[in-house]
Length: 77
Image 1 (tube, rainbow, N blue to C red):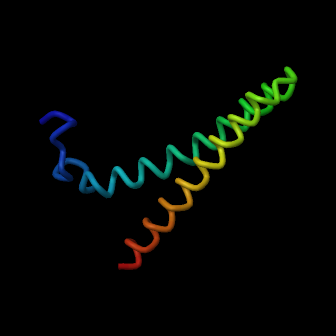
Image 2 (spheres, rainbow, N blue to C red):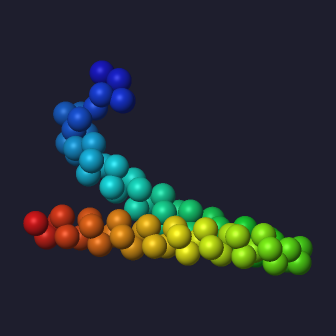
Protein backbone atom coordinates (compact mmCIF):
# COMPACT_ATOMS: atom_id res chain seq x y z
CA UNK A 1 0.00 0.00 0.00
CA UNK A 2 1.48 3.34 -0.97
CA UNK A 3 1.46 6.31 1.37
CA UNK A 4 -0.77 8.22 -1.07
CA UNK A 5 -3.56 5.67 -0.63
CA UNK A 6 -3.37 5.26 3.15
CA UNK A 7 -6.82 6.09 4.56
CA UNK A 8 -6.34 5.23 8.20
CA UNK A 9 -6.13 1.47 7.85
CA UNK A 10 -2.44 1.42 8.71
CA UNK A 11 -2.15 4.35 11.14
CA UNK A 12 -5.62 4.30 12.64
CA UNK A 13 -5.97 7.98 11.76
CA UNK A 14 -8.02 9.16 8.81
CA UNK A 15 -6.14 11.21 6.23
CA UNK A 16 -8.15 14.37 6.91
CA UNK A 17 -7.45 14.15 10.65
CA UNK A 18 -3.77 13.42 10.09
CA UNK A 19 -3.59 16.29 7.61
CA UNK A 20 -5.04 18.70 10.17
CA UNK A 21 -2.58 17.55 12.81
CA UNK A 22 0.30 17.80 10.33
CA UNK A 23 -0.78 21.28 9.19
CA UNK A 24 -0.97 22.57 12.76
CA UNK A 25 2.44 21.15 13.64
CA UNK A 26 4.01 22.61 10.50
CA UNK A 27 2.58 26.06 11.23
CA UNK A 28 4.02 25.94 14.75
CA UNK A 29 7.37 24.69 13.47
CA UNK A 30 7.46 27.38 10.80
CA UNK A 31 6.76 30.12 13.37
CA UNK A 32 9.73 28.89 15.41
CA UNK A 33 12.05 28.67 12.40
CA UNK A 34 11.08 32.14 11.23
CA UNK A 35 12.16 33.58 14.58
CA UNK A 36 15.72 32.56 13.70
CA UNK A 37 15.36 34.08 10.22
CA UNK A 38 14.09 37.34 11.71
CA UNK A 39 17.06 37.51 14.08
CA UNK A 40 19.48 36.77 11.23
CA UNK A 41 18.00 39.54 9.08
CA UNK A 42 18.00 42.01 11.97
CA UNK A 43 21.61 41.17 12.80
CA UNK A 44 22.55 42.01 9.21
CA UNK A 45 20.48 45.21 9.29
CA UNK A 46 18.04 44.01 6.63
CA UNK A 47 14.78 45.41 7.95
CA UNK A 48 12.89 44.67 4.74
CA UNK A 49 13.71 40.98 5.00
CA UNK A 50 13.01 40.92 8.73
CA UNK A 51 9.58 42.44 8.08
CA UNK A 52 8.84 39.81 5.41
CA UNK A 53 9.71 37.07 7.89
CA UNK A 54 7.61 38.73 10.63
CA UNK A 55 4.59 38.75 8.30
CA UNK A 56 5.18 35.09 7.42
CA UNK A 57 5.55 34.26 11.12
CA UNK A 58 2.28 36.03 11.89
CA UNK A 59 0.55 34.06 9.14
CA UNK A 60 2.01 30.81 10.50
CA UNK A 61 0.78 31.64 13.99
CA UNK A 62 -2.69 32.35 12.62
CA UNK A 63 -2.70 29.01 10.80
CA UNK A 64 -1.57 27.23 13.96
CA UNK A 65 -4.28 28.90 16.03
CA UNK A 66 -6.96 27.97 13.52
CA UNK A 67 -5.65 24.41 13.37
CA UNK A 68 -5.54 24.10 17.16
CA UNK A 69 -9.07 25.47 17.46
CA UNK A 70 -10.39 23.02 14.89
CA UNK A 71 -8.54 20.12 16.49
CA UNK A 72 -9.94 21.04 19.90
CA UNK A 73 -13.48 21.28 18.59
CA UNK A 74 -13.20 17.92 16.87
CA UNK A 75 -11.72 16.24 19.93
CA UNK A 76 -14.58 17.49 22.10
CA UNK A 77 -16.97 15.97 19.60
